[in-house]
Image (cartoon, rainbow, N blue to C red; front, side, top):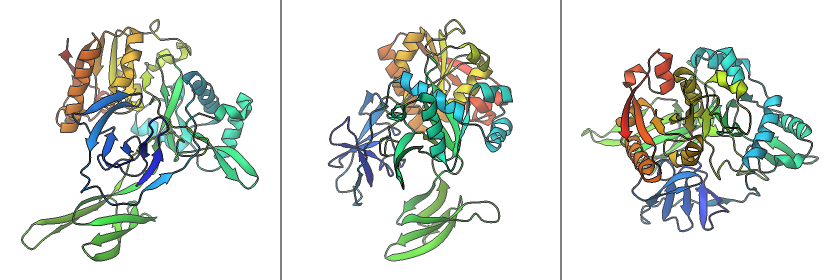
Length: 418
């Protein structure tokens, strides 16, 4: 298990490998004794709200904790700078980045966005090589290389001729996160090639040794080490080709599947020298209909441009952007469905009276998500006098609010909390 010390929480570590509760990397934390996990994704009855969002406590059985080697990553990271500073640096970065034709085609053809919308929303491409040149150009615009210190995504690397600034992250489409005052406070990257992961159940262990060339159908492949009881094998697995094993009496023994991992990642550099974590707090994304954006001044809330007494809430920046354009309403894109505590104060500042939750259509059929929805209603009931409604539609009409509106439909809105 790879861990990174949390300077703000002595005795606690961010889990840089897979969380034993949710199976994802990043955000979640574990204590020094490995007895308690603060998971950001899987709800429990024991939780607390922090600057990172809602965290759920899970207590591990010491007899069942995996006996894995603990590797504590020692990095010289720094605290994240205030929003006004991040905005200054990120807007300079926008001037140095472009959107590749490959990513523009994806946004046009798959996401059904017009060129005008793509341009005004300032989506960008995280490039591959020579990122240090972009960092150098950003410094030139800002006049001082120390301006990159404390800005998530940038870090210092040791080179042949000494240290230099460069940029972290996988290649992909970059989506800016805006505050209610139009400050760009962070980015998420939709990575082109998500990391491969093994999904394993039953009496089997495995790990990916290396990714191989894609097969003739374009599917990704990997050489994997598999341990079945006392036998160790090296096998080549193909993406989405699930292997199942049953006994002669038709009893399930194990399954293994090669899958693409997480597609959306924060642009962050908290695990690198002179880098900064995206947390403290995690950004939310406030989206206005695209015609409003040219008139929205940095540092000003948008009540003169649009009625903010009703704000819609979904998950992710792109769904918020598309929802705002389709519904002509202000939207907030949460970094995760359980991070609703992050937006309480922004909603109050906007004078919001009615919140409409527009999560994916499986919100009432997936137990974990349904539970999160109940906790969200409880949170708003205890902390505000805003009314709360749920936007609903049949999943056959589209999974997310973006899919639904792409099909020319709008959701039904049902009052949850008056």
